[in-house]
Amino acid sequence: MGQTTYVKQWSGDLSQNMLTGILLALALLPGAIAFSFIAGVSPTIGMLSTGLMMLVLSFTGNRTLMVSAPSSGVSLVVAPLMASHGLKALILATLFMGVIQIILGYCHINKLLNFVPTGVVIGFMNALGLLLFTSQLKHIFNISASTYVFAIASFFIIWLAGQYIKLIPAPLIAIIILTLLAGVIKPNIQYVSDMASIHIKMPIPSIPNEMSDLNIVMVALLYGVAMAIVAVIQTTLTAQMVDVVTSTTSDKNKESIGQGIANFIVGLFGGFGGSALVGQSRFNIAMGANSRVSTFITGSFLLICLFIFGEIIGRIPMAVLATVLITISLGTFDRRTVPFIRKAPLLNSTLIISTVLLILITNNLALGVVVVTISYYMIFRFINKKGRDI
View 1 (cartoon, one colour):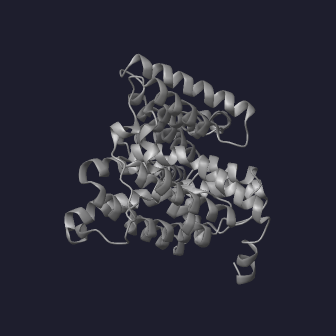
View 2 (view 1 turned 60 degrees about the horizontal axis):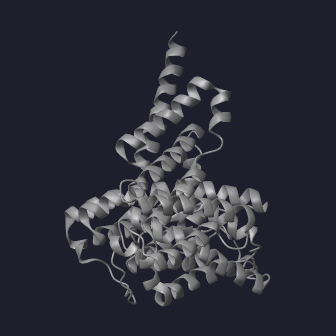
């Protein structure tokens, strides 16, 4: 990408891109908060990570108009690390993740991803949807009757708003309405503040002192590898979608490098890693964005919101955030599943089911993709060798 091309990517309708950037920031808010709880960190860290990542990627990303932030896949990967070793280890893992993504980009990871069977990719997406769905049930069931009422109301508002309102994201509408309602009637439900304390302060770039602890470093490195693999897969799939929608091309290897730089900087400021988001990328394009300005404004606006409206976050009902994530999980399931199985019922269904089962059993998205892909080629090599022997 030449200097002239890069400069042109900042041009376009300034007012339209600024408006889209603000709307995109509002669309990212529910996920930024909700994915924080999946990872086990404070919502303020999720918002900080999202804002910083969007801000940095507006400069370093290769696939313009694509939206990246802490995602369902990466959040599910880091949850066990956060639970067992705490935030410092998670920050270390994010730093490692960034470095690994940069290395993978220089090693032309895009060529390697071409060897991952389509069935494994579909299984990966379906397992991701299942893990995301089941992770939210605890915030709805066996709490109180009011929780069920708010959950049902949230689903209804999201569905209704999605049908008739296109300018403002439906999940955000549900959050605003039900947060205001909860503030008035004060029902017996759980709030964000019940699950995590909200602390807002200006972060200072630093590397955790745990860097001198070899045990924590090795654990963080392993998680960093898993985070990088999941992020690269999700980002490549999203970049391919944006390529098709915009009828343009992008360099997936350079995107991996750009994402790695962004994740490393996010880690320096105490955040956790992310990857590209399909739905929000579609939203950015559909709202008329046509330059890097939209994602720059998104990142800037999110960081401003964090310091101005941070305390309001604690008043959001957890049941509403759970329904938002369940809605996202339903959109995560790969629509190619049934047509793909019909092409070759035995082989394709085996690939998908094996990937899903391994991921669900191990609770490790990266491991499922790697193990099933290697097994796939080993089995085919064995079959071909047997065929030659005969």
